[in-house]
Structure formats: structure tokens, C-alpha cells
Image (tube, rainbow, N blue to C red):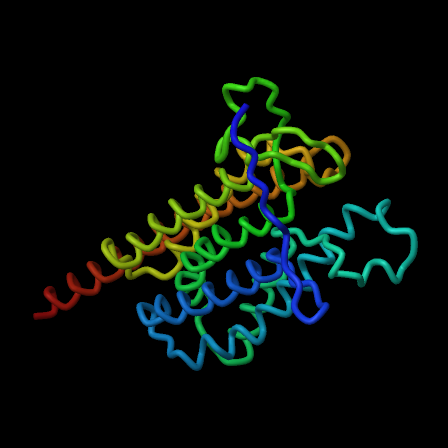
Length: 275
């Protein structure tokens, strides 16, 4: 059998329990903001723009993550008050993404900023934030996959030992799979932003939808704690929507650019003919 990682889920200071999940989540938000500040310079935004944006996005992301989880887990709550006990767990990434996206839209409308330009700066940073944030699942012993009974595969990071709820079993470390996928996608989008240097706003954001959608759709199929709508895993359904929207946005931007070039060429022809 592989080595069992005996990792505590937190520590106590002056009688107050501090959970590693909360620390990891806070650090992931901070990392996302700091990287967005850096990437935003490529799209013409200033540091103060991103700091203000964070005041819109972070609260709405947390609210969205909670509402999403509650909507698809109503049978877990005995009374209305329990819904607000966020410290007891129960946040879903897709809900956070929807809430955060709403925050970006509100910011862009109120402050008159280009949504796609801002999305290009946010999405690579978001992937880095997600990669770090997934380690909160490690400390919380959640978001794991199928049972691993073969001792040859009972080792981390392929599998993780789960003691929570007295399981005492090895399961696929799906939280790590997604963390790694997000990190690799973060590198890819960062290279696209800096090396390929797309001038058209929206290409980076569209690529995020495709990259994350593919990874999440595959990994979600391995998890044992998915939220369902009937027999359909909600996250896989949304991942498919992400992929389709990402491809559609890229095609739209490519066609729009082609039309711009055609119009420019016609104008040049008209000018030449007049001369």
C-alpha cells in the first residue's frame, strides 16, 4: 500500500480553529487579483481598475457559489437558516464563476469598460487561482474520485487516502487532476497573451472556456460528489456549454475580423480609383 498522508485540516490560535481550506481559498483570491493586475496591463487597464473590480467580483462569486450549491442540494438542509451557514461548507465553482462573471458585467456597465478586454486579463489569472484553490479540497478531504482497490495505484498524487466520515479508503485524487490541468491551461493562456499577443479582444477568454470546459468535463466524470440534475452531472453539462460558447466566440471574432479586412480593402480600392 502507498504512503498515507496524515495532513491536518487546520490549526488553533487562541482557541479559534483556523482551517487550511479557508487559508487556501483566501490565497487563491489574492493570487487571482495580483495576476489580473499584471495581465490587465496588456489590455490597457490600471491597477486601481482591478482593485475596484475585485470589490464587485469576490462578494458575488462567493454568493453565487453558495446559491448554486444550495439549489442542487436542497435535501441536505433541514431548515432555512442552515442555508446561510457557509462556514459549514458547500460552495460550487460554477456558481462562483457565474456570480463573478455577473460582477464583471456590472463593473463594465457602471465604469464603461470593454468586457472582452477585461475577460482576457481575468481568465489566465482565474486558472491560476483555481489551480491553487483546488488544494483546499485536499485539506478538506473532498472532491475525490472513484475507489482505488489495487495497492499498486494507492499513492499520491494518483490517489488520495480519505479518512473523512470513517471511509479509510484510497480514491482518485481528482482535485489534483483538475489543479494540474488548470495550471497547464494557465501557462497556455499566459503564453497566448504575451507571446502570440492576440490583438482581438475575446480570444483569450474564449480559449479559457474551451480549455477549462474540456478538463472539467473529463475529470467530473471521475468524481463521486457531483451535483446532479436528474441523471445528468450539472458540471459536465455546463462544461459542454462552455466549450460550445468558446468555439462560437472564436468563430464570431474571426468572421468579424475578416469583414473588417474586407471593408478596409474596399476603402483602399476606392481611394486608389479616385486617385
